[in-house]
Image 1 (cartoon, rainbow, N blue to C red):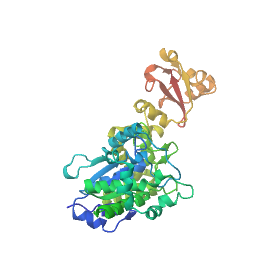
Image 2 (tube, one colour; image 1 turned 45 degrees about the horizontal axis):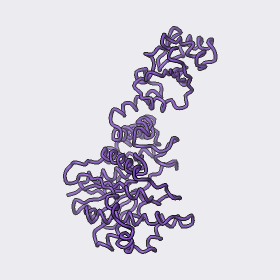
Image 3 (cartoon, rainbow, N blue to C red; image 1 turned 30 degrees about the vertical axis):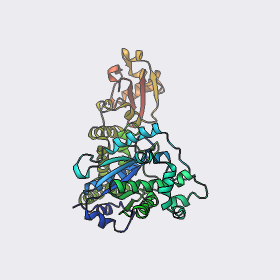
Image 4 (cartoon, helix red, strand yellow; image 1 turned 180 degrees about the vertical axis):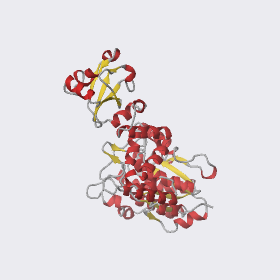
Length: 426
């Protein structure tokens, strides 16, 4: 018998709305349910993690999860929570995005575990050969216009206007549920709270057209305690793709969460038990300055998304940022992580010829770079043991050579604990 999926979500604070009878239906038998993912990019960002984790809990409870990637609906555009029309995507871009999303979902869900193996479906497969006339005849006639007009996603756009394309989106998404209900025995659709209207259109279509069993559960939209938007940083979205958001930046996002947010996030984004989380929160509250909750959260999610090696690099990069590191730690960094850590640090370029036979440290500090104002200042700082190269103290005899360089082209010059300068060798 399946475990109580709804109870699991409830203690984690992951239920916003639920159709009556859902919990009872899921306890009777192993059931199939799905969540739709919008392929507007070739990577998901952490806003999608809530829905991914919902499917993970669904599978862990013994049920069969379907991840629907909207190859067809990506060509239409979902109006939910948006104030303007979205740019529509061409087929080539969509196919690339769908492949990227599929790869990321496979990191979380088990696609080979028997009866409740996860499956990926693409709604383009059932819409590809459906004509417009067929759709309005067989689907459109079952849902009244006044029912569609009453949805918040439509009402909120009536003054500014919305196209028929976006108005029809709830019918298209509703048909997804109907199709999966009929062909895959899916009885449950899950999604964010902004999807409630679209999801219940699906349950209504199933009831009116097929008379099948259908339920809905939505999760709350995550909000940060300070009112800023979850999943965003100064640089934009926090992506699951390491090329878009480095593991170091990803790790830092969670590490910098407030105490209140970390207490919320650790329930939603990790698989730790209620007992483990209670203990962690208790330990954290005894010594808040150690940020045990944030560290546990950041480590758990970074491993899940990027793997253990990426976590080690992210932790090493964090040590570098706070001054507890060696030149070996620096040399282990990728170029992307190096510049993510030292974002905004001034830099100067010298030629490779300059370092071939060794560039004297005084020239590296002043004449060649302008890091310090003069050779005299450079000598004084060196005498005071205030100068470092790649986080290691040096004296006035030090030479910058090729074997000193990070990734074969950078050296990090430092004065004291807080003043850094990047020497670029080209």
